[in-house]
Image 1 (cartoon, rainbow, N blue to C red):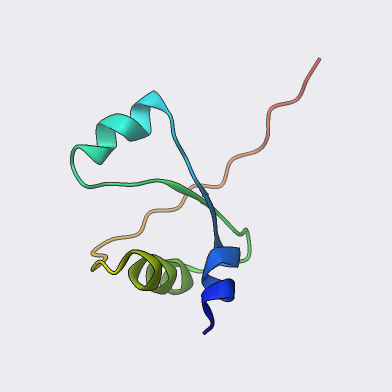
Image 2 (spheres, rainbow, N blue to C red):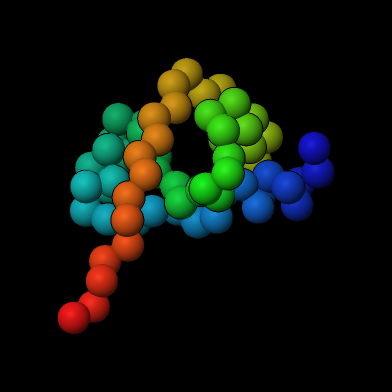
Length: 67
């Protein structure tokens, strides 16, 4: 897989107060492509950041509506 494909999978880091606290435990959050599978996310993180990933957790959330 090319580096460009990895960056298509990992869209952006998710930076909130909650994810900043999780960072203390070496846990990180990213916005990822909706079509990405857990193995694809794992390989993208391992290739881009040159780390070993032990666990992947995903959450699908709906966007906020403006009223």
